[in-house]
Image (cartoon, rainbow, N blue to C red; front, side):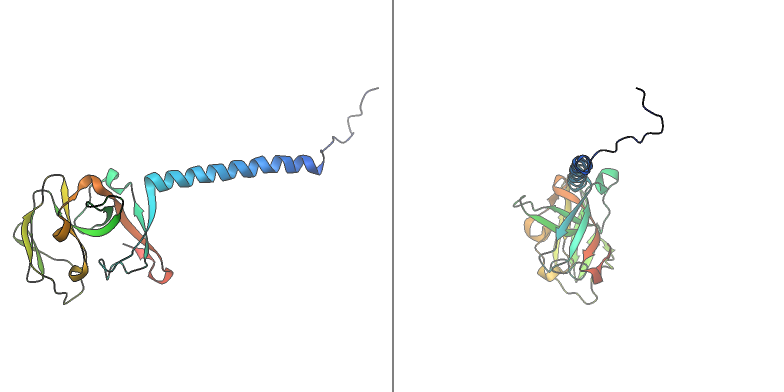
Length: 185
């Protein structure tokens, strides 16, 4: 006996559709975890600011996003806020502002920055900030000179020396928390 062409095709039971949903959800979760891991390892990473060394640009408790790919696509610029592995203990991450490049002579004198003897404005520093003189020092090859914006309360290259370029993790690009301070850096 032949089936009639108009007979409905069996849709399966509710149990069959549940069995199909679980693999789809599992697949979606696995893809999301893989993408999040790739983004975190190679592109962007969150960091927490634990100290006052970068005030007023970054405050204690700020959470920032750092671009790990920024310096693969281009060179750092003077004034960039960089997260890096602390030279004295690479298990710790620090955040400071890039001030000097290899071969440059850096001097802090009378609360002013001089690069190769020329005064260099620092618009990101608060007006009237007072800090001790430093230098002149010549930044060694393969290194940066890093300073905190809160110069009187910052452990930076004045204390631990130049930062090897390979210690740089990435460029701070965004404050995302607290929400009322959210902004591009």
